[in-house]
Length: 130
Image (cartoon, rainbow, N blue to C red):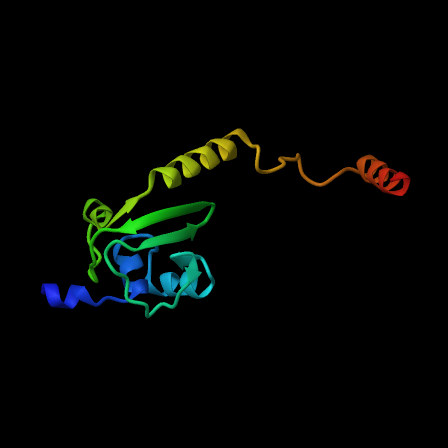
């Protein structure tokens, strides 16, 4: 593949090549689902990303803000894929903070399972009183 082919690449293909998503179909689905924003706006899978553009990408619990550094339509190893973009410092800090909160259990309420009959009665009573 020569350099002219890399000048025009679809956004879904670039996200796949940069290893944000395992398949191009997943990348396309994420874009159509509003999980990828370019300059603060939703975009289409056929959009041609340009070097220097800022993308906001949501995958699972994480939201990354990356700046495109290079274009590629070929999926290669992770070290080469990381050269295609640069994550902003604020984005890294937010992700690390969110990961620490998740690890501490602050984002989700952990329970021992379904409430017992006694606990259900207490919940019902509590809702009636309030």
